[in-house]
Image (cartoon, rainbow, N blue to C red; front, side):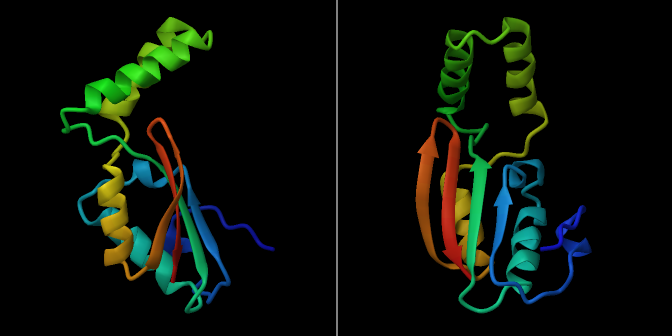
Length: 133
């Protein structure tokens, strides 16, 4: 196994037997860049190869966003996290990350040509999907 550090466009062409995108897509803007990232991933996979995406999913423009952030804040504080660090993290969730709703991630996967998109994990704002190239 060889590890490559960088963006998907820096990765070898493949084709690969499987791929994962773990805890990173929420750093990519939904200005066409998320879709392009998924298209580049799929392009490097063998037909029928499994793909796993795990992403933080809060649509900040949604009326439920404040509730999701409050749940995160309450969980972190209840677990003993430093209140200042929790506040900083909540600010980053709103102002740094490029999160989208779970439905938007599913639509992006399908638009990139993945099939059999299946949610296998949901916890607070985290979602995990398995899909097929």
